[in-house]
Image (tube, rainbow, N blue to C red; front, side, top):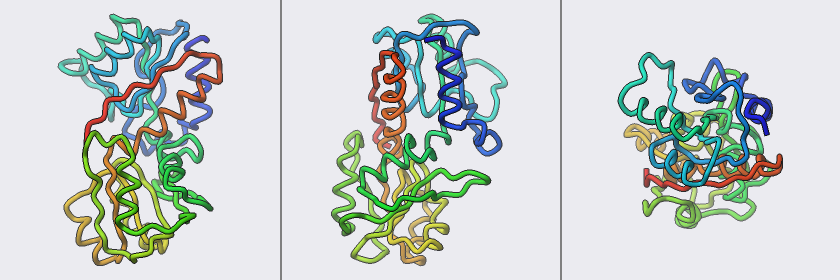
Length: 254
């Protein structure tokens, strides 16, 4: 498939244009030529030396990641960024990035994937960010306890890191909000929505007291671990377009 055709399809399916004014990431094709053919695509959470090397070893023409190289503009290509771009060019690998569009997509997104992993029904959009949303909320088909919620999150690719649960909500957890990665800033929205728990990746110091005072349990499954769903679902999507795909795993434990 032509690179331009594949990236245009991804842009359209993920509605990347809708996130342009709220996302620091440059979504879409970040590195690549005007004309190229993609026979094999690799998918990973992070664009980094390790994933670029693995993509090259896999014979990939395209690397699709959730976290890319360009954040808030690119003034200089030096240091780590130079090394990454040089490796991509050396191995003739294009880089496509989907950050917030891959968090919030209602079926392909990280939040949707984690909500499905948690068996949440009656899912709806959550996590307002300007004109878009980046999370999901729903009702557990079987109620959780704080302990069983921790156990369910421990099934993720945590890199050996134990999930944390700030147990400040009810013992019976049914209504759950999900914002993957770094999502504790949506605690107020979660409390306003009346959910029992907010599930995200990583926390901040102030969330402890904020969650305690709000009476909402906050579960921290790991930034990386909660954001593997989107790239895996994109790999399945692209495979359905006739492109060979491979998914790369480099858990950070963070």
